[in-house]
Amino acid sequence: NAGVTQTPKFQVLKTGQSMTLQCAQDMNHEYMSWYRQDPGMGLRLIHYSVGAGITDQGEVPNGYNVSRSTTEDFPLRLLSAAPSQTSVYFCASSWGDNYGYTFGSGTRLTVV
Amino acid sequence: EDQVTQSPEALRLQEGESSSLNCSYTVSGLRGLFWYRQDPGKGPEFLFTLYSAGEEKEKERLKATLTKKESFLHITAPKPEDSATYLCAVQARGGSNYQLIWGAGTKLIIKP
Image (cartoon, rainbow over all chains, first blue to last red; front, side, top):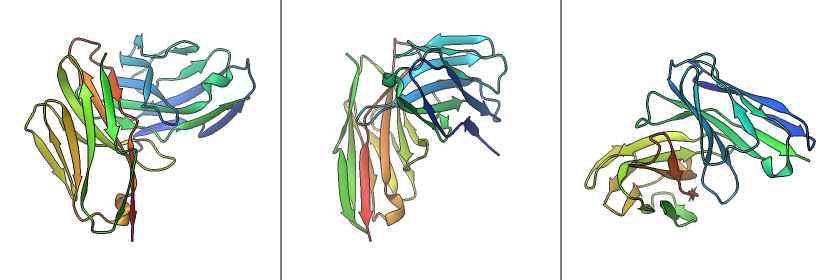
């Protein structure tokens, strides 16, 4: 049982580059979300999805895009990387909004 | 403004020394309060959900309680393997059902 799988684990980007962070879950969860975690701050929601074909913005969506073509996959795209996007990114999934989330192991992104 | 505050920021205990972590919240209406454990370099791991004042949940050496203004995570006779950062998150009524408000966490260190 793999749970939530995120790739890559580490990434260094130059300012202006684009990339996609991958997230896949094998638990048939309808709810998936992307968070960023910065030192001294709580997790902040970037985008979330309540099912295939349905996505919505969270607290800090600017500079990021998402899509959800299947139940299993929920990639996060950085359109034009900026140093302010240096962070640890977590993907999470759940049976529903009032259930605990299962998190991936994270992607540590550095933008130089 | 909805807010979640965790205290202390860090707590050092000797093995076997019981203590409590605090999560105070200010929301218009509580839908659920979540506790997670996060080990270094890993994603948060779900521990408990509490829904109403007076509710308690236990798991091994951990016990979570909830009042109308705060939640406590009590750790009884902790062991070194309980060392981690403990995160609290709140889901408020009225807002988006999928957005959690996260505290910054309490880093717990248990010395043998």
